Amino acid sequence: MTASAIGSNLIQKSALHTLAKLNRNFIITRDLSVKEALEASKVVSAYIHRLLTKERRSVWIAQRQGRTKDGNDQTEQGILKMLLLNRGENEGIEYLERFNIIPVSISYEFDPTDILKIPELIAKIREVEYVKTKNEDFNTILKGIMGRKGRPSDLVATEKKIIGVGEIDGAYIKVGSLEKVSTSGNWPAIYDKGKKQ
Image 1 (cartoon, rainbow, N blue to C red):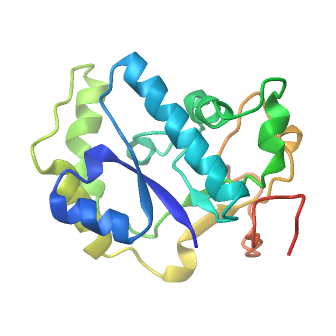
Image 2 (image 1 turned 120 degrees about the vertical axis):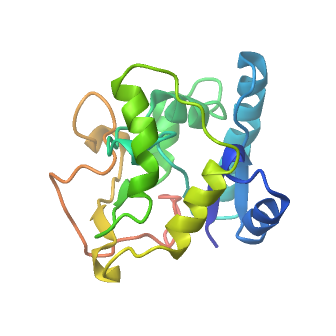
């Protein structure tokens, strides 16, 4: 069973919170102090490690917050740093090499939330602070779930299996690059390379 991360900002209504738990989501708490964020990141890192190694489940986690607004699918370093918080004392990047990291970029033929993104994009262009309305995230989720997206065969734009961190092109991990498109469905049964099923 797959477990998925979801930001606390997306599940502020109790019904959404319950729905997230029923869908095996784990919560990434937003708007914390630096110290609180570090402690929360340690807990999430340990939980993800347990899911991958002990429970042998796959994990879906966004590579950065807000990526859908500008289409920039570059992984934030903070995500990798968070994952590395659970590594052993003498381990470095090889800790990540234990898992099959598969960058996946999901795109739609039609984006049902495109019109909802415009105010924030305009604020960014004008270099002014954007403040979300009270139910903005809820409305975006609802429209994203219920809205027209196009043909299902067009949903997965890129899927590339990465065996090791050393095989990733460039100075950073670029998730969702369309330079090497594969739609072969090479999703692994497990993430622990040492124990194939």
